Length: 244
Image (cartoon, rainbow, N blue to C red; front, side, top):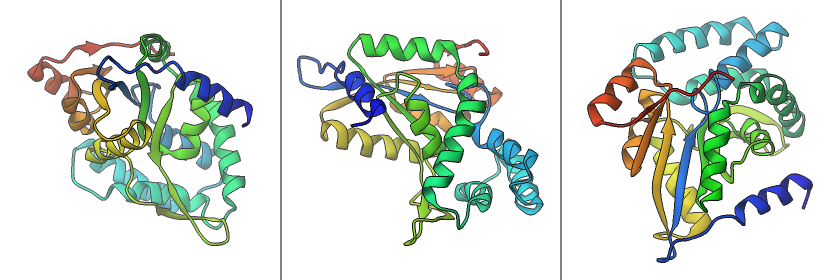
């Protein structure tokens, strides 16, 4: 085991099932909830500033973002495909290292203090802290080395037979309703089917409604207007976490 794997095992050792043998989950959305802003958007700006992504994908992403803002239906994989045109054909290890550096420079400084504190409180109580995110897997893995997250599931991009990235999503992006499906698979693999309870959820966007609605204790964190309205209608607590 390397140092990060050892630290992760230490974190997981804090998980304490209840008297019925069930593990209680505290599940966090990442973009807009744990961090200020959206990590794929920050990544596109990072790439564009360095001339590492072509104008065509950037313009297509702007159009996609406009449709997303107005809640228009669209293919969730499309945006990830456009971002990964910058990495298509490059060795996985090289790209993952680039994304780790990007995360250290641009994403970790955006982490909200209250997200860190909430995660620690759940760990101290013996709960399992999980993060479900539409962001790219190498980014989330780097975040796990710096924050008290015990498990994560995020969007994974395909790697070809030569160990090089394509710009296609492996499976489905971990977005919207897929977050609930991905969470179930993750928890079943970690603890066994029927051995866990989805107790707490934290999220900021209307697309996370299904995730929040499945939790026994949902929290809307710095919610966008649509989720703020939904939260008020449902009677969910609204948390205003500070900017980092």
